Each structure stands twice: as structure tokens, then as C-alpha cells.
Image 1 (cartoon, rainbow, N blue to C red):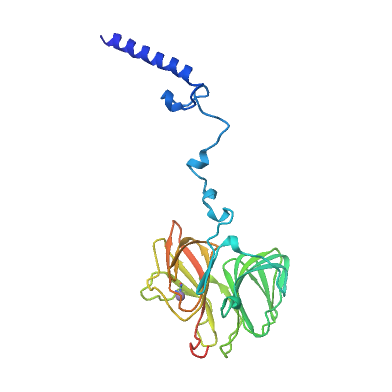
Image 2 (cartoon, rainbow, N blue to C red):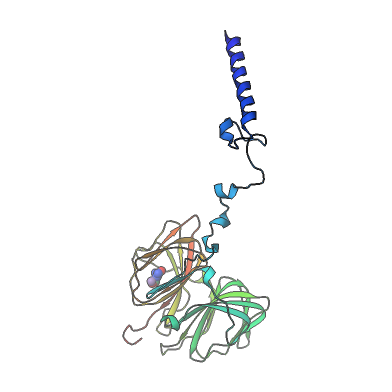
Length: 305
Ligand code: UGY
Ligand code: MN
């Protein structure tokens, strides 16, 4: 009986295949045939739909969609994502362009911008009343400070007090994050430079993030620059609301920033302006730790400024 049943099944399969061959030119659907698509049985080799099924990572970069941006500007905060940077020349910067991200035009008490220094570029000292802080993101810069010529590579910083005459230059090009403000503390801040990791980790109370402050915490300074590190899954414990202002650049990682009653997915390269009293909260997500750098006006009397 078994050989007879097997022969019967083979016959049915043969009839099916024959039917498929007849129907295939009429219907392109491979499903009709119940078989893998073959050139003679549906399928179109000139089409490549693989991106629709499994988009490549760069197709997930929504920032490149025409007209789409995560950037936002509200009275108490702004998010400036990478595709919104506008580069232009700035007085004092030779062979360099700058992209301003925060400025007094936004109501801020400081300026925050990126500087893209080309080969053989330089930056004149800031105006006499202005103090300047630079974090080297890429490349290398030199600082002529008195008789010293200090070379600074990625992850290093330099602070120029008001009335500094030091010139910043780059032979082969560099990318910098700059904070500037009109000095208002009435003390004696001094030139300093260093590498981020050389700054001691500071206690953070109930917080789990790692904290470094790159400028001395004395009344001689009217702002500080913090480096904050979060492991994926870590978040701000305090749902902060404070009178201080912030200018933040996400250096590594990704997560969700809450600003006021809005929630922003953010990633490395995104910048944030936070006005006084904007509710702020961050959670680090993804597979890599988050590091951000953040300006904070400190040691200022909230009444006297
Ligand atoms: O010090 C701060 O105010 C800091 N923790 N704020 C922030 O990360 N948004
Ligand atoms: Mn804060």
C-alpha cells in the first residue's frame, strides 16, 4: 500500500507543478504556487526591497529626512540637533568657521558655539571683558601663554580669564566647543588648562552619575563646566528646577531629555539650552554610556547676578 500512496503523492505534485507553470505568467504571486519564488515563477530581480524589510542603520537616521528636525525652540529651552547647525565666519577667527548654539540673543547670560578650525587657523583673544573656555573635541590646538606654547588634543580644555592676550591656533585643524561670557564675579580667575580625566570625581549625593568640574569652585568664577557620565539606564535622581542656566553638548551616547513638559530623544552631537527654572531630567539609554558637557553659572548671587 505504501508504494502506491507515494506514487499517488508524486503524481499530485507533478500536476501542481504543471499548473504552476501554466498559471505563473498570468499571476506573479509566488504564493499561488506555494513554492520559493523562481525566475520562472514570480519574483523580479530588478527590484531591491531589502531596505524596506531591514533598514540599514543610516536609514534610521531621521535627521536626514527632508524637512525633518528634532530641533526645537521654546521660551525656556531649545534643542539644537546636528542638522540645524549653521556655520559662518566670526570676527577674530581666521581660517575657521563657527556655529553659534546659544547666545544672549536667546536670553542667555553666555555664548556657546562650535568652532571648526582649518589648517593654519587661529583665534584672536576674546574681547577684554570676556572670559573664554574651550574644550577640544577633535584635532589639536596650541595656546601661546606667555613664553609657553601649550599643545592641547582631544578631551583637553583651556580657560582664558578676562583680559587674556593668549592666541589659540591650530596647524592641522581642530574642532572646539567654546563657552564665553561677560565676566561678572569681580574676582581673580586665572588661566588654566588640563585633561578632562585628570579632574577629580566629585561626590554627587543621591545621584549615580559621575561628575567632574573643570574650573575651580571658588567665588573668583562665575560659571563652571561640568562633565557628567551616565551608564545606560542611569538617570537624574533630582528632577531639577533651578535658577542657573545651562548650555549642554552631548559628547557620547544617547537617551531622553525632559525639558519642561516635553521629552526629547537625544544623541551625541545634540546641544541644549536651558533657561532658568526649566524642569530638566535625563535618562541614559542605548548600549553605550552617555557623557555630556554642561555650562552652569555658579557662585552668582541670584539677586545681584
Ligand atoms: O548641576 C546641574 O544643574 C546638572 N545636574 N543639570 C543637568 O544635568 N541638567
Ligand atoms: Mn541642572
